[in-house]
Image 1: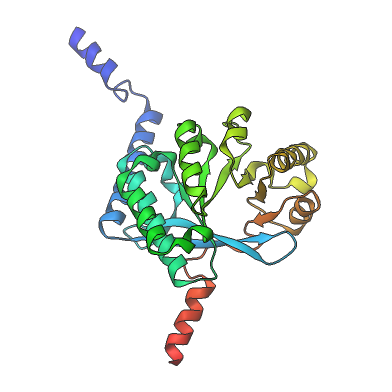
Image 2: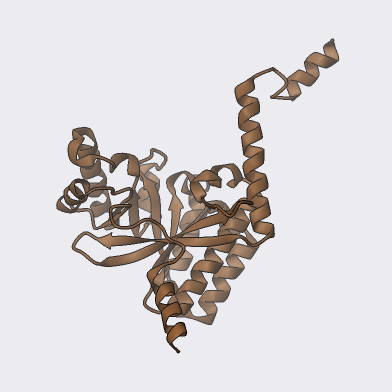
Length: 278
């Protein structure tokens, strides 16, 4: 009996908790799906435009996608939290950067943001991809934006600060993603020197009719302006919210109101058209 009790303490799913068992099963399934996609190179970027409040495209964000066994395109939100702390998370960051750099090389007018985890800063392959591309074409750095979430940046703030100092001298910009979600100490915000912040979508959805979110958005914009940082509002889904954000000093807007992420961006469609007519 004592052995059985000891074994139960070591096995978090032996206590008969069906929710824990279901979560564990789901996470294993997600990891298997991502592992298979990586093995078969079924990974791609979907591109979403970030619009200037005054009009026109400011840049695009390259969002990682994988294909499952049925060929469905799976967005990062469905798997990134499960793999974030594993080596698969680092490999996904490497592939996102490789594909983003390739897009920048092929399209000299493109400016692109790519998501990364602070955990990838010390991952050899990721750093090699970045260094190789910047050596080959130093101008790529001037068109590359690296996005780091608040939660990731706060894992190793000193390392992130040092990394940013190094790469900003090579033209690379940095965006603090999910700003306002509650992780960043204002002391570190002062030290980070991010070039831009992306206001978390929970404050943006329905902001035109939500007085509480209006106060919070104005406060976040004020903080960004004080630290001389560009602002991007995420999850802009209607004209009313877009107008409120523009009128209250948000520099750029991103969301389905302007365009969903697509694996067939306009420049690739144009390339195909030119090749077909050649």
